[in-house]
Structures are given as structure tokens and as C-alpha cells.
Length: 301
Image (cartoon, rainbow, N blue to C red; front, top):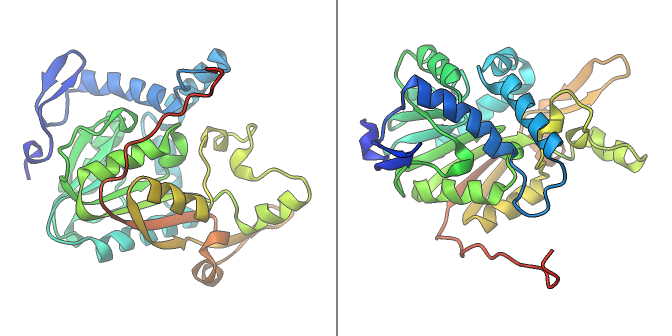
């Protein structure tokens, strides 16, 4: 599949780029601005420029070359999460159209051989895309993009869209999901994963005045998760963006013992996914959502 079939001519860096993976210099430049887009504060009421800049630097260090992702994808927690998400996509995608994996990192969750159509992998980091292409033997088509600045694909281009551990990093998740809705064909399948704000241990800890892990500003990497979700909130946000939620799954329900060892249960995750560590959701593209409304407070603040 040629990328021209899904990517129109788009303006990038002051020039017209026909639908293909940009060159190394452009890709590196976008890899920097992609993180800035994800960490950008709203235009009104920016609380701290220094904190914003610190967040950008931390994201660059963590995700630019894909090394951190490579370091955890084989951990059982993430291995199960990725496998469950991939199975939801393979079993639920309709037709033979292409499938997009947004924020693929250095290793795609999907095996192109299991999909009815071509696989497109997209990420902000050129190095990660190179690793992803090598890991699947060159069977996926790579695209370097910034998911927070609009997706450079034609409307209705994809039969399925998979994104893992991305939505919690962006300031406007509804805008991101609306873009996912736009590039999906009618009836297209969205599968996403995101850390659960309310796993069982954090629910109990909150009763005793302890904050959930996902909102800990001192955690070495979870502090970058600026939009945490519960299962019910994720459903509401998907509905607002024009999707019909089909299923919520989880990887496991876990309990961390005082010595640091985790006790986990896959059975409990199947029975009560809202208590699990990761939320894995499948949703079907519905009709176009209503246009977003911007409400300005009476005092203009």
C-alpha cells in the first residue's frame, strides 16, 4: 500500500510534503516539537513556564529513542497488556482496510500477518520507527508524526486504529480521539490502552488519605501522565468523541506486598477489569460527534 492512498498533500515546516515518511532532519525536528505539543499548556492561564519546559526535557529523555519502551515491553505487565490489545484489534477489525498503530514505539503490538489489510506504524521518534520497521521485517509502513497536532491522513483512511499508553500524555484527549474518529472509516475499530487511575490497591489507599500512583508528582515517570482515566471516565470521553465503547479489558489485578513483590491475578482482571492495572478498551466509530464547544467564563478568566 502506498502512503499516498491515505495521506494527502500536507503542509509541514513551511513546505508541501506528499504522503510519505519525511527525511531524517524533518523527523528529528518533529520529534522535538511532538513532545512540546504533548506537554504544551493551554493558551489561557499557563501556571508555570519552568515546569512546562522541565516536562518537555523529561519526555525527550524518556521517549525520544525508544530505549525506555524497549526496556519494559517484555515485562509481564506490559506484555499481557499489549497482547490483549492486539487480540481485540485482530478479532474486531472489519473489512480489508489498513490499520494504524499510533505511538508504536520501537516494537509494534501488531503482527501484520494477522491483519486483513496493511499496517501503518506512526511515532514521533525516527529512531523508534527504524527499530519498529526492522522488528517486523519491513512489513509495516512507518510515518513520523506528532499526534497532538492533527493526523496527516485523509478522513476514513483506516479500518482500525490502535494506540497504547498515549492518551494519558496529552492535554486534550478529546481532540486526539476526534482525530482518531476522523481518520477511521465508518464502523472502524479503535483500541487503546491507558493506565488505570483506580486499581484495587489505590482505591483502598485513597480511603486512608494516600494519593493514587498515577497522580504522584514525585514518581520518576508517572508524573508525566497528565490525564489519568478510570474505566467510567474513559467510556464518557470516548462517547464524547463519537465512539461506541464495546469492551473494557485489563491485564491483571495486582497487589504490591511490603517487600516490593507483586501478587497478580488474571482471573480478577477478567471479572472486574475496572480494578486492574491497565485499561484496554475497544470502541467502534459512530456518527460524527458534535462540534466541540468552547465555554468562556463570564469574567473572561
